Image (tube, rainbow, N blue to C red; front, side):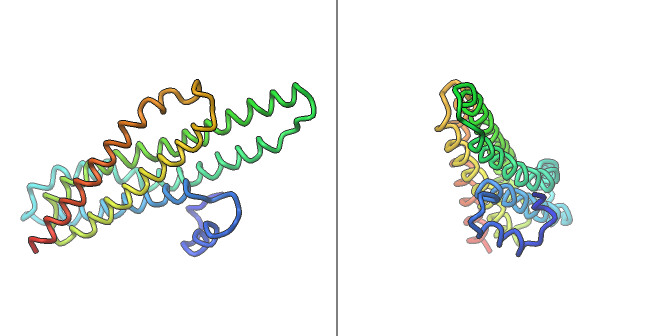
Length: 210
């Protein structure tokens, strides 16, 4: 399903339905794209004014990260639905014989690992944007501080929501699956907490100075 070609109403209605997909993983992919869009807007509003020249460097860094995420977020939303559909399909495989049972088990594990990899990529992408937003908020156009804050909230939601999905899928797999993801998740979680707080603190300071 190409969610990027749907209207906002159609996507919301699909999310609200009892169909297996789209679900939270697709929602956080879309949230990532929206965070990127707002970050680009704040960056452009900073780059357009010489008064905010101290923020030009980070604004350009943000744009370099955020512009690809406009498409990547939508791509991840689509891939998340596809990966979960593959999990559902694997559970429907025949299991009449021992051979079929073994093949079904392996297919379920492979599909479930794939369903963990996609949100992990979403989380990594969200982190790449989130870690730049505190400085953009501090040095960027103060008139867009609230927009920077919303970008931070959306990026944080994309990160944390994606991590939920990674954890959910990995927990149903043997520990030999997704070893690298398991090792890196604690750092990703902690970094997300730190940069989310930094961004919100920066927004509050900017708003209090207006």
